[in-house]
Image 1 (cartoon, rainbow, N blue to C red):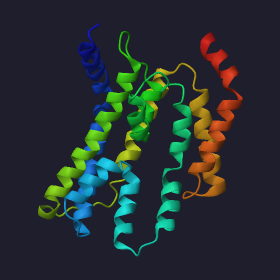
Image 2 (tube, rainbow, N blue to C red; image 1 turned 120 degrees about the vertical axis):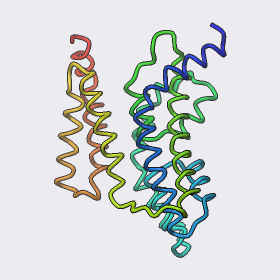
Image 3 (cartoon, helix red, strand yellow; image 1 turned 90 degrees about the horizontal axis):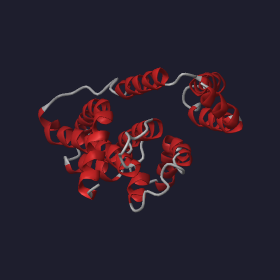
Length: 236
């Protein structure tokens, strides 16, 4: 197959999976751009931050860092806490990223919650190169966030917008992704383990500190019971 045709086919295969992300990212990106404008920053700030940082929740936090006193260590540790989950995403993607060549660098750089959810759970259609499929999923999601932040940054001064409660948009998006994955699987052992361990972590560690313990517990349990779960899936 001609390389250009192969790349184009991968783009067309990846695009439909990113449409729900488009709705969430553009809407929340606009709110982010307007929020930055409300703090007194010009449009170039949300545009460049969305392009080079590409970490939605951390970008909101970074806006306040820019207004506070210079404290790089505080910024470093808070960033690690907010984005620590990506350590587990990265470990999960080691096998999938093998053989992707130079695309691996951008796949690592552009890894976010939504790209991880799609690339880890969706099998590329038959005849589509998996590396290019994951590349375009990642690139499109990145582009959606930049577009939203750009729109919000440019028109923020013209629109009065209350951003309170907009973070629920991404929560709703993850619920939809979870439901789709639930419907796709015949057995729900991993999903139930994730729900159960997350609930226990929430009870013991509280709402502000449960994410990292929950992900460690989920990774440990799924690693420990990997072979039995694989046998169950094959038997199903």
